[in-house]
Length: 148
Image (cartoon, rainbow, N blue to C red; front, side, top):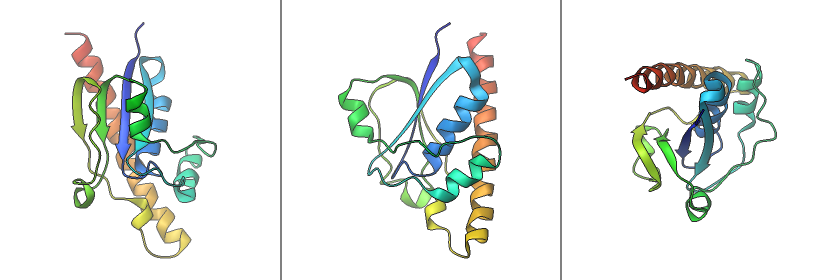
């Protein structure tokens, strides 16, 4: 079986794209190969790590990656999905190595959340659950499209 290669891209590869990669790996099983990268790779967001750990997914050892490094390596993907919010979408990088489709899913940036650690975690859970729902829709749509 050929796995469908999916790249999730955001600005820093520290939150949303990491969540999307981990959730597709978790939910997509053997049908998908997921990666993530950023335009300006930063540091993995510990609140994002904690929010995923709550649902049994451990990304604590994940590294942030540069979208340019993946491009220079000649990587190709069936899908490239940008997950920047609308306010930073103009800075969200475009990856040219797309075989099938480019998509944009807008999610709020957990690194921008204010409040106590508990309040930031609560807001991050909302984003995590939105990404999880979108990944579920993506998997179902891709399965339907593959059967045509």
